[in-house]
Amino acid sequence: MKTLIAANWKMHGNLDWVQKPAEFRALFPQNHDTIDILLCPPAHMLAPMTRAAAACNIAIGAQNCHDQVSGAFTGEMSAEMVAETGARYVILGHSERRALFGDTDAWIAAKTRAAQMAGLIPIICVGESQAQRAAGQAEEVVAEQLAKSIPTDADGDNLVIAYEPVWAIGTGLTPTIEDIAIIHDHIRGCLTTRFGAKTADKIQILYGGSVKPENAKAILALKDVAGALIGGAGLEMKSLAAIAAASEQA
Ligand code: PEP
Image (cartoon, rainbow, N blue to C red):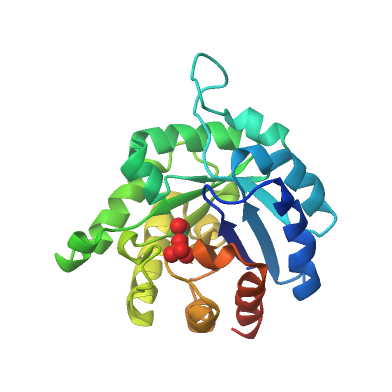
């Protein structure tokens, strides 16, 4: 399975950042066989970024989309509109969207369906809060989010899951390597129940939450970790390239 190294730029950057794909490739020359690189910039950069990234064999993704095709939804972008920019992926259900913008599991499922119908690959984010982990509920929470955020008619061949413990995002904290392995194994089990082993075994499960060049190798060496969803460290091409290099070593 290929490794997917994905950077979520959140609401950072400006149009000068169209140079970042070339900057990244200068630091980390092409390696198509084992690693896919994905940059997820803010919406206004999607179209110019896809053009700039194509020459560098880097994919572009959005950070959200709406579940409806069109309509009176001020400030929103449909999955078709995202696809029209040339983007190939869309992050759905990031914990910031769940906490700040009312993304429920049901809405994430509707967005996932819309994204797949538009030809996009959704990256569905799941993960427990600090309190839920402390209460020993991490596996239960993740299973429930997966059950409700993946639509019943989802195409398992075009789906990525990101395990992002909420308490690890932007905090410098990470679960232990053993805990990451346990949850990823659990996610694989949930996906196997849903899609069957043949499809589930091909679904990339990313880890996200304070991934840095220093911890990337140990995390990416885990059997069921097929890549990383990176926030802070993905804003700098030097650290993103170091994470990609660590994944090659892993
Ligand atoms: C994220 O926001 O998805 C994330 C993983 O952020 P960070 O890498 O900064 O923890």
